[in-house]
Length: 516
Image 1 (cartoon, rainbow, N blue to C red):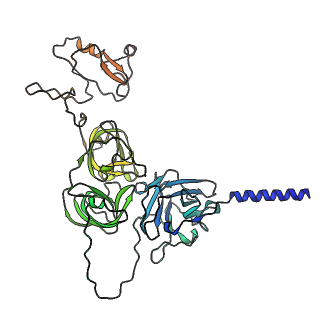
Image 2: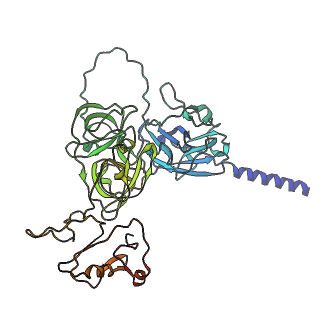
Image 3: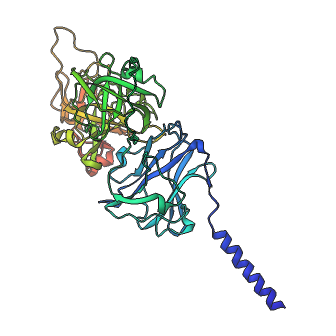
């Protein structure tokens, strides 16, 4: 009897353990938040070429900001968040949102990105409510995923490096959803994500009497569009200030108001990329937030009806650093001066990212698209070059602010100048009085010492031995009448002679780590 009781206890323990390993029951989110995953790419020419497309299938205005996308391994043991959609604008009916691997080829077009990959052989992604993880909008498992991974029904087939997983559509192009991943999804050739809503094919109408035509609503300027609510369908008219490809995306361009310079981004239909700066265009689409930037998602091709000289770029004084400091200049053509810092970084698609140190100590990332890169002398992009960059300001991604990048349209050499608003004299004082000899202008970094009038031969050697280092700055001590001392520019910190180091001084040749 004792043996039977022991056996029953063991069976009960095994049963309890098995129950604890089962995934929690999943509940579909309310129909008002009708969202489905329409496409999944698990890798291409690079293993990081991953993306997921989320599509709104409700009546419109679908709230997506409460959701997150999570990934679970095929075994169901590990689950991690890929991205949070906090801050995302509601999706209109049929609208799509792209999220992708930050290291892959599709990161630039994505609303948000992740850094750790997903397995091509098997796994699952779930679109779930952040506050209630068991409440989901959709779940898709593929390949070797087990039931513990959290998919719906049996898994969809696993994709290869040349295929992707795509949800089937009905004859009216609506997404099919039978609650079984294997039935709802099929493998198709790998292709870049399409964010253009599908248009249902309808039969031609029967002949009827022609109704009285109604006048189409007038086209809006970019400034007027910026005052329009999200998800509005509008027709925009303006001048192309940055052509497709110049902002690193083949379908993204910028349209400005000829009168004010206010501008907005336009995400064109696939293939509608044959535009140039100065083209006056009219285009219809939906007003959305794309990568936190106001954008017109085009539903028609751009109609070119003229040409106008794009406005001159605004010469911008760098704002006080802050998360949204550059927001007032979003999409505008601006001109910024600074000094390039560090080595350029390669971006997807052949673009390049640079860091521009601004007057006052701030920094701004500068992007140069592949097509623009060919037109800029490479010597201008070297570190420590003082340059003037003219381009269009866009956000990189994210909802926390600070993700700004100036996409360059032109880069020119510029002298290292005094701060904005101050007279550019050598001593930093007022300009010389009329009739006096002009003060010589010296390039910063030129090894030189300006001596006062009537100085003796001992003056220059004494100066070279009286530069004290105090709190990270250089200071002249014990000398009167010194107008200017300009030290040579050191590329790297250099050794300080023992005698000089012992005295705590820096010698005339600049053999010290003073640039830092």
